[in-house]
Length: 394
Image (cartoon, rainbow, N blue to C red; front, side, top):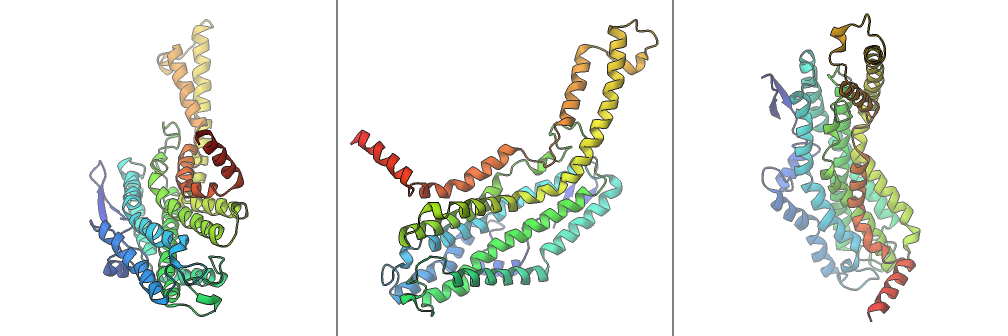
């Protein structure tokens, strides 16, 4: 836990969001927690723990470069999981954790939490820490990792019966297949489900905070009542989206190359997976929608009343005789003042119910879709385009 000091000098406990969570102590002892300047070491240890044993055991089994229809060297999904996805999901602790910490502290720094509610806010933070470090959550996450692994192994993810995992299509595992099913693949699913748990805790924290009597302003220029900081800077969340997308794309690529599949068979599955990943990272922001909706409706009524009073006196001064006009209420009754009032009303009318811009989601989607670009080359239309392009230069 850290401390964040508000401008008024009050101290409110702030949560370091990724310094904990399911099995955090075990991950630190294994050296795969990238906190406190150990990012590169964590990256190497993840690879050595999850990927290198597969290579050594596959070589001992004779299925590293041959000996099966799908040797380990050709399994794109296995390499992508442990050389790309798992390291990225572990290293994502640093940028995403820093981002969530700043958002948490901003509630106090921007005076969004009233003085009378500071104790309640601190209590919500304590509850979030307990939920993050819950032993029950750790058991659930670990169990979910092994259940997902069991399902993936049972379905035969590669689509090839004779693979480096079960040579000859038998039900028994090779040595490499056993390590993959018992250690490497559960590790991947564990760090993935762990992120889902963290995002769930973050969403519940935002829901409870949004129910406080926050000092939100309908005319705030961020068009989110002052909560726009929650959606600003979503770029770090592209890391887990990219990791998930890379795993799905590599699994599809393996089936296309070695099981005779086509991209058309899996494009809907890929899109569904990408959309699900996007919803997981931005879904927590939807919990503040009821609060912003109430703020927008209240602001429209309040600024509607103010606009009517001001416009009536403006017209009375400039279009009528001006008799009986309350000069103290008018202030400076010129066209610029009326335009400023109209601009405020437009800001209120444009309040976003979810504090992010559509372009932010578009950027996340584009970055997440990058691993699928090589798959596009496998379609017949792409091949014809490449062939015609090559004829122009050859």
